[in-house]
Length: 300
Image 1 (cartoon, rainbow, N blue to C red):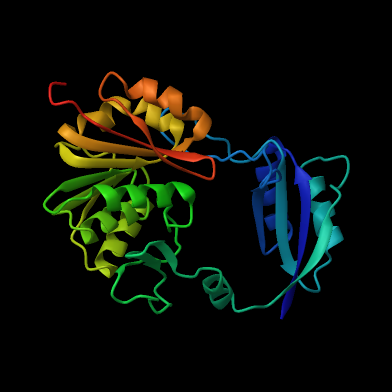
Image 2: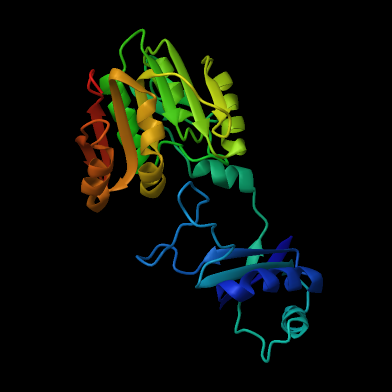
């Protein structure tokens, strides 16, 4: 079995109406992608604190619609454009999409990741390369944090250097829960995480259970109290700016804070934002990203 895909460029204003019109015309699916993905003009869209409400599409959007193999794609494209009063049908490219074992194909793209000699991230369908190591069992899913991104690696390496037995940790913006789970396996006595995305909280709880870790993950909309020996926040620079008072309030005097999701050129600004609460320095860098860390003064 095979399908036909049609892809074409449009702008943000037309992207969502065109997707709806294509579905009405008989397309099996229609998705919107960033036409600038993989270039310096790529624009991530996240509904994070401190950001304006994100648009539903990019200024330079690409629509990819899927049709049955024998569908009259040209007529369906014309019907969709006509229903929106467009003067012409967008130029589109066709491609044949063969049936594949998508689960197997996806799994083949994710191998175990060695963070350090004693710390591995292992998808559930793989055998661990080192059963004696600390193995984090984690599958790619709906929440950020599989260990492949430089910012996640930076935070994991910081945790390996910083976690001491008996300490407690808060993962602010927990995503998949990978950092809190790693801290627990590295010896932290108790770990907790919060996230703005309910799906991330659900994923983090499931990952903790899979790893045999006791962890508390909550929606960040719920009141969060308490101070921690270690706080880690691997989010984006803009919410890190906005959330500085809230994040620092959870670092107990003498406790440590690590921040990532920060580009190297943003480091000095973030250091300045956090200076009223605690001094930060660059702990490590990787592929243009930095991890900042610091200790909250006992008198603050």
